[in-house]
Length: 80
Image (tube, rainbow, N blue to C red; front, top):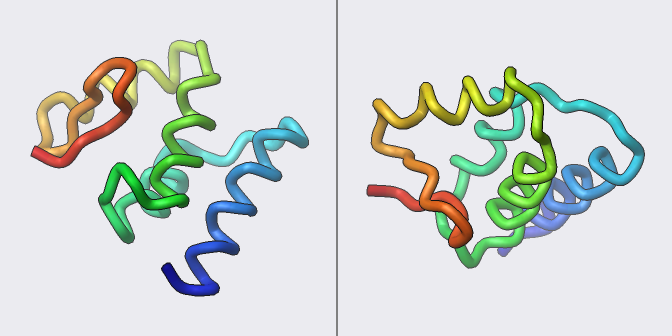
């Protein structure tokens, strides 16, 4: 983990806590820098997106079903 990783994880958490809606694509881009379920940025992005119950977020998640990144239920996102 690098200092930059810590900042990205902290920023993602702070945005969610403040109710700031970071676009799905931007959060996904942060997570894909290090696609590792144990990485702090990945975890924070999964948690932030998991809290969203709106149609836009779910539509984006469904769209990812056709790509190598898949939503795997309660275990978060995994690279296939």
